Image (cartoon, rainbow, N blue to C red; front, side):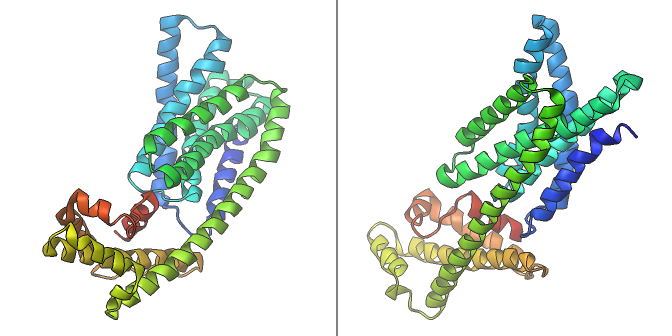
Length: 330
């Protein structure tokens, strides 16, 4: 029963974060993969720490305060970067949940190892400290990294820079925790009290921001697509902008760019519609021709080339978030 104190708090925290996702952005399959990677990363970090300790003969404080935070956060965050790069996470909310899931897997493996090594010495107080303190810290650091990563990518679009910043913050938080500035039991209590509140505030902000973004973007894109289908594109700012490109592109390229813009609007609207449907408790609608249209869009993107993409940037904002949307349709 004692080991339950090492497992239950972090699993409950992960479940609560999952339930806070009102837009149903999280994929259960990806969530399970994140937990699995967390377990694997615990073994990788153990091997790294053991190897470095044998090579450099670190004392216990140096190893736990400065070496372990670096190795453990690097292996945990590696999979988070892959999840974001593969466009499985497009918003702060789902990225944070995936990040916490990785930390959850890590904590489950680490606490199991401690329980097996210590046996009867794995007493109730230690189980509580590790379950309510260390375990939630492992999830929290990767979740914070995920929040910084997604927020930074929406501003700069650079996964490398924002990833490094997020990783540095995760390492710093982990190192501060391992310094045990407060009594370990008090530290665990502080984490249990303040971390849920902090995450709730972040999620409420992100949800409100996402709702506003969806409503504004959805309305604008519907209006634009309606103008295109009514043959009134020339009357819009977008139409007048496209007209200025005649001097720089051939007629064939302009037709491809027009089709690409129109198809982007249609698919982006459908992606946002599905997000809003899931938030309201309805199933997403995936038309039978979606795959064909996504393939057509990729073909058109290749045909217009990099110059065409750059020329359409004022109209087609293919940021990480937009790419994530289209990826969900597929």
